[in-house]
Length: 593
Image (cartoon, rainbow, N blue to C red; front, top):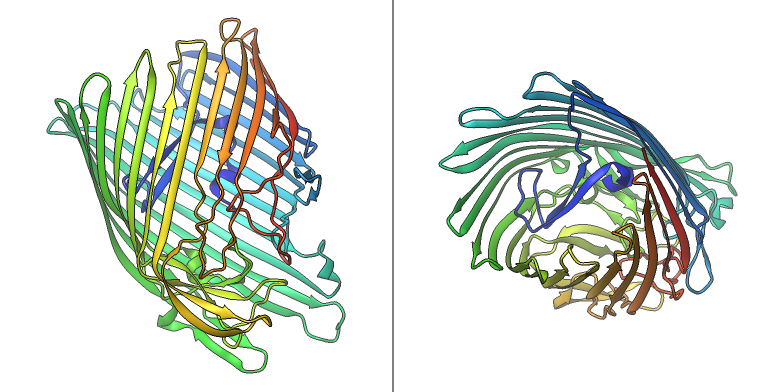
């Protein structure tokens, strides 16, 4: 239900890579990029003592506490890691001194057990039980009462092979989520009490092989993923107890299966590095019938039978080349087409306020796949004495762009409290995005280290429909807009990080400044609001001592700026923007034995 990062312990994460564009096709239909979160590596040593890692964190604004503990180690052919964490945060105050409902409690336990079968083969078993309780969502009409998630996986690795075949990797995984939300802490709960219970299952597997072919590396394989969702919202009329309890489907046994075949080949020839990738996806979706009812008109429309099923065959591919111009400069050009089928929400969601605007959203099982045609040009300068500078520019043409359009109240009225109406997902034609990124990192050999980053994206949709709404909230007309802005595009931003290594790198003060410009290029068709710019400053000090202890203290939002991100939702039932936390003091203590 929640994003995968919500159930990922950063303490168990070794590295996070952001891969831009529709170019990495090994891990699924890549549309606009992917985030690769790699768990900490484990090796099988002849003998490795037990390790204990403990972390205690505290943050003042939220009165937030986080505890994490892990016991891990290796002995001969066995690897193990047992861990657990607890997070307890209260409401925070924004820069204006207003309290924002944001309290939550979460606790996780998990473990990994690895076996070295032979010198070349190993297996790894993983399990995690993640639980959330009483999570407040200030911008939604409901809060999360509980969330219970179980994640399990099995990995097999056969490596260091002789001959053409070099490596074989296999993975099986399964996740199960039970998600319960209600409005019992909202003012209107004395009229209607609504409880939503959703069950979601995600399972699948993948196999990947690596060959050495004509002096290059060929990686090929297949993967399979199945997503299942079912959920209802139960409404009890408190002021009219004689009325029957109403049960509404949010998902009705919805299912998506995706089977993929992929291959990529990379080879270096003198000063050139080439890489090409191709992927074939077979995507099938189905659900029990979806029936939309009007209180006066009865059944308005119905998706059932073949109208609710869809099946697509998608082909994605990419090509890239990097030229090493000299010892310092390189230039890269990549082009690709990534095709994705509509997701579960876009196909089957039934009247929930899931977007950044204040509308209930309705899915459309008859949506077509969305395709991103993108090209990236990158210049990179790397000098051991001066640092690394990278400049990237991109252009993207999206076909069958999926977004939402407003449905007139005569067609469908919302079911959520205090929303403006209903939007249904549809294929809006072509959209274009263009932008750039610039990054700099100074050499690590100097005591003073500087890092900078800036990014900007500009997005337009070729044609969109704007509904003219009068003061009474009624649709009185519509007009077609050309080159309207795409919604939810973040504005230009830049960040600057400076730190100085004292006492042989054991004592490190740090200054971080992040500046975000105003976003005035907003969608007229969707009545998107502009957002103001802001500048944030944070300071911290880290101290490493005895090679076992690391202490860091600092202040986030040093000047207590009142700000909100452009992508923040408005608080439901109002025009009040959801502001981020104001000034907050924190400390982190890490003990690694």
